[in-house]
Amino acid sequence: MMNQILLFPTTLLAKSSGFDAMWTKFVAWAEDHNWEQTLVVLAITIVTAIVVRKWLVNLLLKVAERTQTPIDDEVIKQLGTPLYITVLVIGLTWLIIDFAAGSNFVEKFHIVPVAQTIAIVVWAGIGTKVMTQVLTLIADQAKNRGILSANLVPVFNFIIRIAVTLLAVYLLLKAWGADVSGWLASAGVLGVALGFGARDTLANLFAGVSILADTPFKKGDFITIEDGTRGKVTHVGVRTTRIETSDKIEVIIPNSIIANSRILNETSGLSGDKYRIRLPFAVAYGTSTDRVDKALQTVSDDIAGIDTTRPKKIVLRELGDSGLIFHYICWLRDPNIREVTTDQTNRTIYKLLNEAGIEIPYNKLDVYMKSQDAE
Image 1: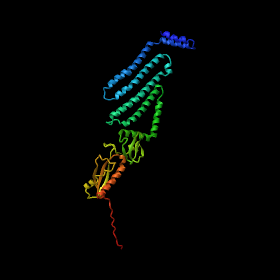
Image 2 (image 1 turned 45 degrees about the vertical axis):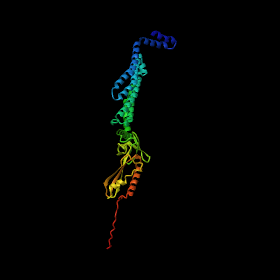
Image 3 (image 1 turned 90 degrees about the vertical axis):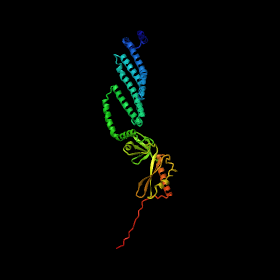
Image 4 (image 1 turned 90 degrees about the horizontal axis):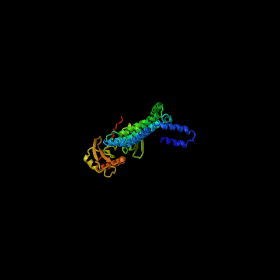
């Protein structure tokens, strides 16, 4: 049967130039080739690939369902396709090498490097995807324990992509027989040069990673930096942080400056976006403290910026040089209107104290002129 199949093209193309010699070699090779072994290997390859993709993955998923973490489930789900492709590539590569035994076909068409390239690209892509999903799951599970901040997931994903890409390029060069020792030396020299040339940028990057990991503030918080800059955080990046001031001016601050500054976060406590302010004022000695409390009971009635659902306090803080120093303590509805609310509250306190006849002390300087008769 095989001889009849092989003789059919010979009859069709017998008149073709040079075909007889080439076809004679092919017929001799085909007659000597172990076709049963080839068919068995091909069948084993296809069956193994299907079993790995369907049966083995499903079996591993059933085992993974017994664990409490979903991480292993996600990893196993992604392994089906690359394992399937890997088995097919190995089987087909072996078949091609077996077919081309005794010739330079494998070397001429770079069969082995091509197979290795396919495997490296497939596993590099799936490796990046799996590690990204694992990081996201770890961040979701550990967000209440402070192990891995969700803000760092994009940073680690970027690092993973770079690392996997560099490793894949290295393996591809090795697969194609390239000498990578010179490349590695050049990369080391280039890395040192870039480190010196971009040290400010690197400092901002490391500071940004530190800020994202520690989370001293987040988007939407009101912060005051040591140099006096105050505003609402609109963006926390790897290199810079953006703050919108009460004047609606956006300030872009390098993370290296923020990392080395003392920061007051006005809205990161248990009270959420509420912010408490203290407004000092003084009354003259001899004034009844009960009278002060009664006079200032209605301070916040007509001020929209004060949160009336939270308790207000009038605290005697200090016995000053010229009078009693009180603090009026209240909560703001929005930290962005601190200046306006402070102005309205101070005006109201001054008005109510005057209406109650309570003296507001101030420093007085008496100058005595001594006359001296001329001698």
